[in-house]
Amino acid sequence: MTNRLDPGAWSPLVWLELNTVEVRGQIRAFTRCVIDQYATVPVAGVLDYEPQAHQMSFTQLTSWPGGQCKFFVIHNLARSMYWMFGNLVGIDAIHMMRR
Image (cartoon, rainbow, N blue to C red):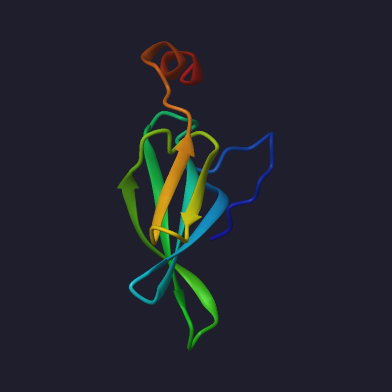
């Protein structure tokens, strides 16, 4: 199955803009998702890197405030934490996206 980014045709699920983090020695990617033309919000995709196969594989969908919008994950080295910057979408914007 392919998820082409063809503006004229919608796939039920589109992955966009990966943000990679390290969780207990494992590389994970959190990605913005467009699910059913923005009918499902706020959700982000989680992918895990498999070093032996040299590829990313889907792990799960997760609750993620603003997951349908552009977001950034920033590593704070001094505190060994990650911070997520994104847009929280109000109910009016959700209704507009579903039209």
